Length: 566
Image (cartoon, rainbow, N blue to C red):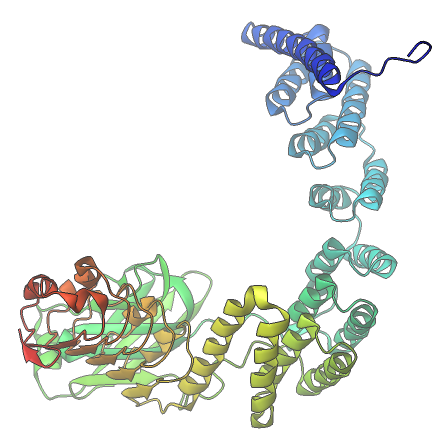
């Protein structure tokens, strides 16, 4: 053993490292304690700058010390010369640069650097732009640096056209530069916007699709280009519309359906009867602050309202919305127990505007490219998914079988997200069903459709009877939009909750056979269904004993449970 260097054991190395860390911690705590004391005493001096710099170079995210440094600099500005302040600002910039080398994604360091540049009497913003480019060359997805660069480019008066060229350079260098694609999506509508079409100019779109095609064929598995592709085909902002106005005399209610969720109050949404405003209070059907469906109770006082509600004479109800940005108006002639007006004569195309910003020939061209790529990469989820979206957008019946096949394949090649694809398939089925319904429809059959989730039920506010049996539903939250529903069939699903059936004021028949309702508390959602007459619970675990029937006695109109008298 003589002549050999003794090698420390793991235990010895760990002990030495522990002692070193303890010594560093002791020094660190000592310095921070001293800084806290100096700040408490409002001591703004060179020593405080030196002490905080020592800590920040080790831990750039200690934002309290950045705040302290700004306080010191603001104080120095009142007592030092402009030349001295220039030197101090340069020290700050050097410090932040060193800190960013330690942690390039430090919120505090980037924020302090921008503050210093604005505080600097003669800040060199062009130098900052070069610094941003340097940091982005090290990490092209550093969104802290991207945010800083956007601020700096404005200070340098860099035009959107120049920034668009910069994004092109980055993308051509690396197609996987997600941040560059995203930045590009903010610049294109500024540089190449066609106001007449409400979208990007078509010749520019075609060039962008060529760029995307090169990227997709180079690396089909890179998600960056596919997200950008989906954005590029995305719809332009559609104007807000009132889709439906319904007057439900039996409920003494007026319901309004908007094309998108909006916030509403009695000032921005006005109800008019024969061109006279009525004082009403609006409530969202789903309980949210921004909703597509709003309803109010009609005032019970007033001769004109009484004649409208109780008499046979016709009257005109109007709804006017204005929030200072958007305005829309719709009227309905009240004649009968339930009167409604849709702003369109049919439901066709209700959900087909997702890609309306691109012309049909562009969509077909993109689909052809994706199909070619799919032949080369048959198991690529991004290609399959994009093909599905394009075929849906083209709204051609000949694609129906292909869509179903592609969706099934997606659940196999991307099994970790199979439930997402099943929910998306449910969305497609519901959209197709709603678009095929006449606007005056009061019944809809969605049974045995392999549904795993519900959506777009705000479009069904006038439906009185719905069949959702033999699916795989675990939630019926969206049923709260069915304010006119009298009969609901939910047999043979996987429900363990009835949330969504609250306040179904008109519901008379509910069938939820062979689901997964286990506790009496699962029936609590029905306590506000005051008109419920028949309830079918057969095949649910809670029916194994009769105690649940006591819970149902709170329903005043209930007569039959599973066909037997209560």
